[in-house]
Image (cartoon, rainbow, N blue to C red; front, side, top):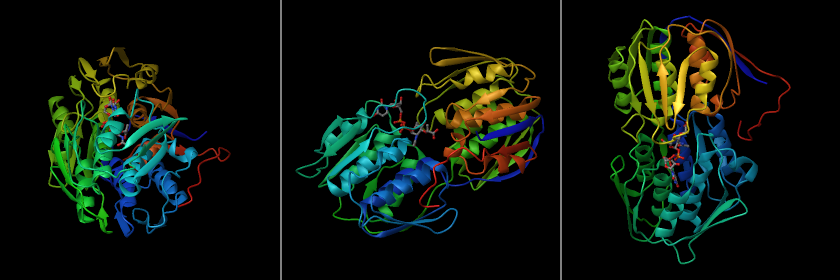
Length: 430
Ligand code: EPZ
């Protein structure tokens, strides 16, 4: 079994160049289905979730060419709908975007109910509501979600009861080629929604309002190809910022858009951590001592749920008691049990973790329960004294490129131990 070994205690010093955002690249790659022309996507993080989605497109007849470690050429002209392989599509949440893309292009779609991080209930009812508002019939049969628009798709108003990133993505994908105008109300405002809209507009779509809670999509007859660069990953950047605050040192994350990280930066400042914000970089300076703060996750621009586990880990060493509430995924606290193995004092009450800061913790064998919890385990091990062994690291590799090398370059005593026997998914697009 592959594992990460960390000897904790080293402060972190240096610069981390942040890559493209996984949660933006997934919708943009799916959106390539909507055109028969060639698209080139740059600044793609070549993590396992991305490789899986590219393999799914290839298996459905798309032509995929890996141009470099961060650029991919995609042509979906000869792609057939409803043909994503179950064994691949069931492994990630991002495969659900093929529903909106294939429905938008072909008028039909069928994908196995997606997998992804085990962070609590992740239904697709909002997605189905969007498709039905546009005139499609949806059904869940044999563990697959199917959607079909026998009379074509017509623009409509879609109101989401709750802000949903995925449902907003799918509403946009399904409506860009529909007849007429679609208005999406209570839409997600995340930077990855803006990235998707900018990409689609560069392909000839007519989308306004992305980044606000009301998005208007005027249907067009067809889309052409384009070349597009993915926005920087705000969660990758936030992860290294919080790691520096927790362990101590001085770390600069570059190639970032500081505005995307305002909620994280302001929480670090509230805790008493020194943060310097530049035009495309953020520097975090810390002696590993800071105050407790309370956090409540919210849709963007609020504090992101994808930063909750990392920040909760940081608060295990704060001066005082913190309360962390996850309003997006109320049961996203499995990692707390792992942290208590190191000597952290934290407990979970409903959707809130109560964390009483301690000065130091000891090493322990740690398991990654999901992608961001995995990053949190690395942060805990970097702070804890002694040698910690982290398993389940395939979950970390779903969303972080070279996390071990990047921390090692900052001075961490960290190494990756590959189990040469364990089977891994060999990407067809390697
Ligand atoms: C996306 O998941 C991200 N995944 C998640 O990141 C992220 O945590 C989440 O957005 C919130 O920001 C990708 O982008 C691939 P939602 P998604 O729909 O779209 C409920 C990571 O670590 N809901 O915004 O699945 C849902 O249960 C991953 O990178 C419904 O009830 O999240 C949740 O409570 C983990 N019905 C809330 O809405 C639906 O049909 C927000 O979920 C859809 C969602």
